[in-house]
Image (cartoon, rainbow, N blue to C red):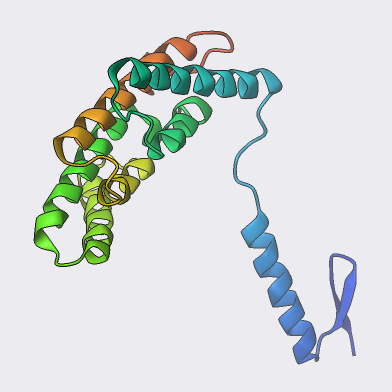
Length: 190
């Protein structure tokens, strides 16, 4: 009987346990495979400093205005804006459109669904459907209904806070990505 080898580990070809081990090894390998290319230190540092600058400006404006501008989804927006600026999910239309749709879905679900947990789930699902249909998907904006139903901010204030914070981050991303090493942002802007 021949043995099949899987990266230095031999399993008998006829063994059911060996087949299960191979299948498990393949699943683990596919789940842990990284799809992002390596990035140089300068680009990584610039992304991190850009996010620090962006979130600091939002926080500073929050202190000046008394508005709760530091929403949890903004951390994910900053990660996309400064870390993955060439992603379609990071583009200005996706960010602003996503935040608008997330807010509208939150408000409509508040009136359409009977319980808070049902309304929250419905709003997140509806936001995803509409963002995808309009081709303005921005995953962090899918969390806005959760923010809205947790009672920190909601209604018009949620929209204004999300819009103002995202505009600040987008404006700073436009500046940061023109600093060497330069990145094209927004994409298709040549």
